Length: 192
Image 1 (spheres, one colour):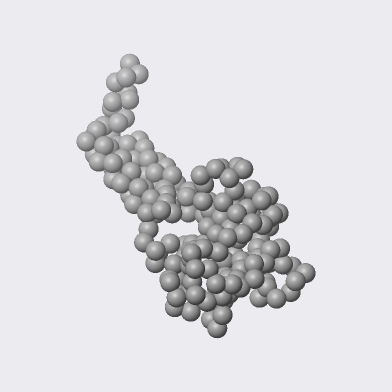
Image 2 (cartoon, helix red, strand yellow):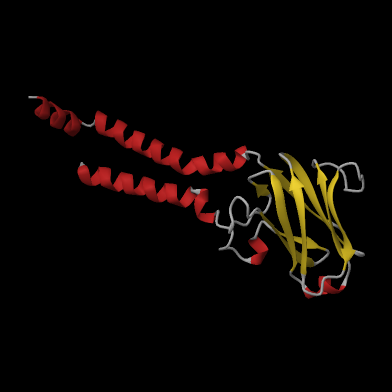
């Protein structure tokens, strides 16, 4: 009986580890093509990072920015072809539109060439949704939806899958044990 319970618990833990999204959550352990912070402008790759050193000096964010306030924004022009053409960035409040309405523009860096391959800037972001728009001359723009100090309930739900699976497996094991005759006999012998 104990052997069966050990196997069932181990199987449940292995299953929970396999379906747990925490394993794939690490930003730094993925290839460039799988990185959620990479977008394409035309056929060229760009990588976006946001920093808030006043809160977490070494933390790097992509689309989920945890705090309001001054945020350093960095777009790495991964492909060398982008470094010789004018590239600009606009941040617009909300998630609608194409960023051409100046009333909603929070920050704007005009298109210029960036031989070092890095577009840098700073913006003061309040709580809410923003659209970061990267434009390169003659190419379709690329977009990032930024969530500042917002809860992403889909991400919370994905993180709960592992613990819920573990609880269900343990509940099933407990139920099966309570139904077994050996467990009742063992329990009865302990009570007397």
